[in-house]
Amino acid sequence: MVRAADKPEFEGTIVVLGAGPAGSMAAISAREESSKAKIIVIGVEPALPYNRTKLSHALHQEHLLHDNAAGLVLHDAEWYAERNIEIRLNSRVDVVDTYGKKITVTNLNDEETVEVKYDRVIFCTGANPWVPRGLIQMEDEGEEVSAKKVTNISFLRSLRDMLNLRASITTLTLPVHAVMVGGGVLSMEAMPSLLDSLPDGSTISILQGSDHVLSAQLNHEYSEHFVKNLNKHVAGKVNFVLNSRAQRILCEKDEHEEVRATGVVVKTHGVERTIEADLVIVAMGVRPFLPKFGGEGDEDLAPTLSRGTLVVNDHCQSVTSPSVFGAGDCCVIDSLPYAGTYSRALDTARVAGRNAAFFSLADKDIMSNMPSGPKALFGYQLRMWDTIMMSIGNTKPTDEDMIVSVPLPAGRAMCVFKKHKLTGAILIGHNRLEKQGMALVQAVRKQLSSETVMGLLK
Image 1 (tube, rainbow, N blue to C red):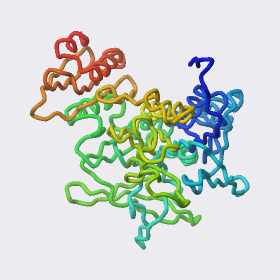
Image 2 (image 1 turned 180 degrees about the horizontal axis):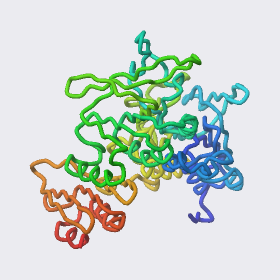
Image 3 (image 1 turned 120 degrees about the vertical axis):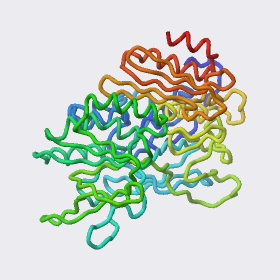
C-alpha cells in the first residue's frame, strides 16, 4: 500500500488483543496504514502467531513443531521487529477498561501484572472449544470433571491442544480406539493425520448428532457422496456414528491416580449405549472468547455485546464505542451472518487494522468496509486424500429454489438457483476438480445466471 506524501498519520497507541492469525493480520494492516503508530500485540500463548489450519498436520509431521512450532509460525520475531510491531507473548488479558482506555495484563512467566494504555484497541481474541456443562464425568460418582484434568481428552483448537494430543499418542504402542465427538470440519481435517499417527490397527468412531456429517456445509445427499469417497481410504478404520449425540464422557482413575476417559455414552434414537474409548477428541464447536470488561463511565459508550461476541459494523468498529475494533471469531458484524472461517477472520482483521490506524475516526466515507450481500459469502473447502469438498451459500434449498445436479468427470456438483441466479453450490469429487470448484464459488458471489454457470462447469 502506498500512502500519499501529505497524508497525516495516526501517532497514538494501538493494542491488538490476541496473537493469532487475525491479531497478526490486524497489526500488519495497521502498520501499513500508519508508520508512526505504536502497535502492541498481546497473546496468551507462548508461540508467535501461527497458522491454525496446519495444526492437524502437526500430528504426524513432527518437524512442524520444532523450534517452538517454527513450521507453523506466520512470521518470525525479527520480521515483526523490523516493522516496529511489539509482540508480548504468554500474557493474559485480565480486564479491559474501555472508559479509561487501559488494559490489565498478567505476564504468565513471572505472574507480574501491568497496565497497558491505548488510544485504540482491536479485539482478536478468537474462540475456545465448546464443552457442554456436565459432559465429562467420573463414572462412579457422576461428578463433573474439567477436561484439563483428563489425560486422554484432547481438543483441536490450539498449538497446546495439538502438543497434548501428540504427547498422548506417543505413549501408545498397541492398537486403540479413538472417539471424535463431532462430525464437522475440524474432525474431518484432523482424521487423516490422526489415523497416520495412531498405532497400526487402531480405529476411530466419529459421532454426529444429525443424520449426516458436515451438516453445516452439505445436505444429506452430498454428505453421503462425500463419505462414500472417503470410505475408499478408511473402510474398516473409521466408523461414522450418525444420529448419535454424546451424553457423557465417562472417566476413572488409573493405577497412577491419573484421570482417564474410558468411554462415551451416546443416545441414538432415544436409546443410550456406551462406546469404549482409549482416546477422546472433542470437536463440538467453539464459543467466542472476550476478556472481562471493567471501568466506569457512560454506559451508552460501552462496547455492545451479543451472546458473548463484540458487535461491530462493516468497518469492523464497535457500533457504540468508536475506539474499539474487532476481528475474527470474537466479533459479529451487525449486517452479516456469523461465519467462523479462517478467511473471514483474516478479512475482518485487514479491515479492523487499517481503520484502527486511521488518522481520524470521523472519516467514515473513506474507511475500509467489509463486503456485503453475495460478495460477503464465504466458501468452505476441504481436502482429504484425493477428494475435495467445496461449499458456499445456500446449500439447504427450499421448494422455491431450482436445484440442478451436474455430473462431472470424477465428481458431481449441486447448483441452487433462485429466480435463475446462483445462490448456492456444492462440489464433491477428485482433487483435479478444484478449478471448477473455485469457479462455482465466484459464480455464487456474482450470482451468475444458470446458462453461464453451466458453461463454467463444462
